[in-house]
Length: 172
Length: 85
Image (cartoon, chains in turn cyan, blue):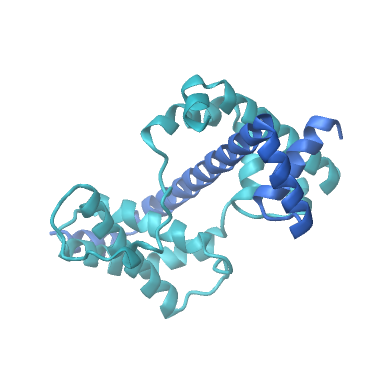
């Protein structure tokens, strides 16, 4: 279901050109600008209370700012010389924004084999919908039956994670 | 709900900070005594992380669709391509 499409499109239209210009000035290309901007929007949407339907200057400034920080972070990861050496600058970026290499196979597996459950789980844990909203979206009679299904899904996915041997070793 | 599901619900409450301070302390004490419970908590935490990555991927898909849609508009597309000339 994700965020309101119209609102998000307007936010994109308003903010991306400026973010793209900033990345171009720092030496990046269009695809990089696009990827970093998408991550910035994700970080913005994950901040509590930000899924509102307003586009103010602060939202735009925030997105451009985070896109630039993501660029610096990318440069630092790629060991390019950058003048910013301040961990505080990166504090707004979650450490686990992207999965590690070893997480990708299990994630890929869950995407295909466990899609139904993953859709339901992400609606609760990621989109923070209420169980009543989830019941409506996923056609359960009540929030209560959706809750039971959520726990079953959690159990199923947890079991799949456990059975991925490399995984089991890593989280042991 | 059967016992396994109730256990999952309890671990979730612990992870999502839904337990009272007293219940939290009891839960932590139980974890100290039970390697099995510790393992379940870790696996469930990992599951939450995988769900988060999955959610982000869905969000990225939506953003890519919006990007393509806007780039199909002549004005927007020109504005962006002129930046990277």
